[in-house]
Amino acid sequence: MTEFALPGFAVSEFAMGPAILFCPADRPERFEKAAARADAVILDLEDAVAPEAKADARRNLADVPLDPVRTIVRVNSADSAHFEADLDALEATAYRTVMLAKAESAGQLALLRAYRVIALCETAAGVLAAPQIAAEPNAVALMWGAEDLVASLGGTSSRGEDGAYRAVALHARSSVLLSAGAHGKAAIDAVYTDIPDLDGLAAEATDAVASGFAAKACIHPNQVAAVRAAYAPTAEAVEAAQALLAAAEAAGTGVFQYQGKMIDGPILRHAQTVVGRSRHRAD
Image (cartoon, rainbow, N blue to C red):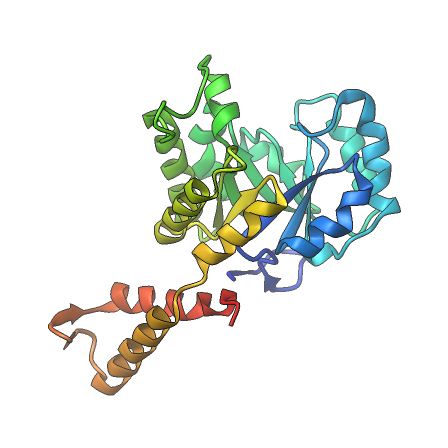
């Protein structure tokens, strides 16, 4: 997991593993179950909670506490009537990592200086502002969202009939990933909404790993295993990466040949990533 140094915070790991699970904040009986099933949990005060239930949801944050290192609170958008009340509720908790729904500007992150912020870029304005958002010191990660994005454009679906993302969604996904990476921040891949389709989720999570996303968000506990499996390299892949790194150390040069291939810095970083992710293996 990537480490971040932030003003006012101790240096610590980006606390999530690869599978981050949303949990409605108005369902406190699910909090501990969600935390036990996933690498980290997102207590959701936004879309998952009806307006009339938001006050109870906020109280639940303090009444049913979880490990703050592995807990994120998704607050309503900065221009929402619920935003200030969400922040007031957070002050009564130990939670200091928030997900800002519908983040659209760097200035909005300035309203959350006391928190580590995962900026959810899920509108056209948010995707276009992703580079500026990622540059903010308290931004620790960026996530993108497909359905809200398409809705903000007046569209009706982020995917075609074959289940693949439409071009505009793929553009947004890549833009958010590149913006996060350019500023040394983590990127989180969007949720997969077809809950029973675990094969489709596995394929999308595998692509997320290969592309450089640090994690993928889940909306159901049954999705966690597929995401974890995608992030856990095979024993063969780990062994091959370790052998390559050992060969590089023995070569002692910047560029060398190994098993008929030219090996340089980027290839070695790929191998280091594989070895680093081996901790996600169940064995």
